[in-house]
Amino acid sequence: MSERIKLWLLPLLYKGALILLTATCKVRWHNRETLEQIADQNQGLLLSFWHENVLIIPWLLRNRNWGCMVSDSRDGAYISRIGELFGNETVRGSSSKGALRATRAALKFIRSGRVMSITPDGPRGPAHQLQSGVLWLSALGGTAILPFHIEVDRQWRFRSWDGQKLPKPFATIHAFVGHSTTVTRDELEADEDAVIARAQTLMMENTNQARIAAGHEALPLDA
Image (cartoon, rainbow, N blue to C red):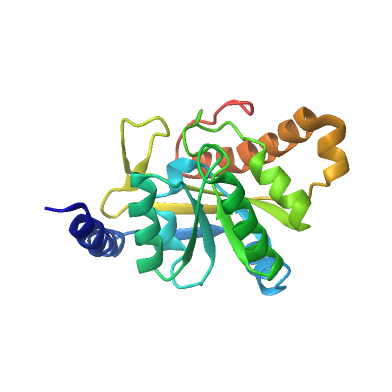
């Protein structure tokens, strides 16, 4: 089977399988009103979630016409296709490839008042370690960062660097929205490490709330 046919067919099969699987699941949102309120203001938003969520996010946030930054790789092509099948847009590029093009496209996206999703520990990890890219996008775009995390009480975990997961049948999916933060260019230029640490803590606090709600142990705040 050619790569072109695989890129067309496999995401379609995945979409169908995920819809069938999640039809048996319950979704419990926590602090959803914050996400909806900020999104409705049409001032742009960076929705920041760990890379381990990328298999579930397209379904959970389907048909919103939001954006997502996806790595400019073979795997990224499949993730991009899945995102589009679920009614959202993608911007291709990462810190390792196509960074300048992706940054310009992401800034244009959020400055138009729309929501852009980004995985601050992607595309290669380490898992749960925030990199500075999301912070610079926030500073340059004048846009808030909103932590977001999904945990499932019963799930399959993949043996990948990020511990990618999928819900098992009849699982409960917990979607946690954290506290938003803003970053300025002056802050980053003065002490980038301090800003990273602050954002890392916000991300991990929200992650741990979701983990505890799903019956899992909390992780260290610095992961």
